[in-house]
Length: 65
Image (cartoon, rainbow, N blue to C red; front, side, top):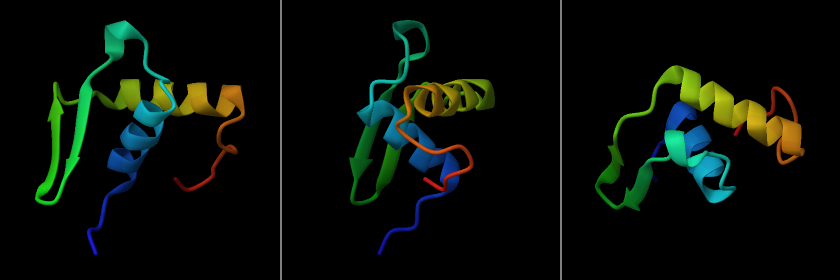
């Protein structure tokens, strides 16, 4: 089993839901050996993506992703 931290899960969930705008968009590749992200997202981008998902009703506020 591979453990993924909360930030990586937010990134993955937001990426799947297309929550990122082209300006803050980045590639997410999930692999057996881990994850490659380029460029590494800022915490503000993660929070913006999370808020976007909450606003769209995709996730409940304070829900663990």
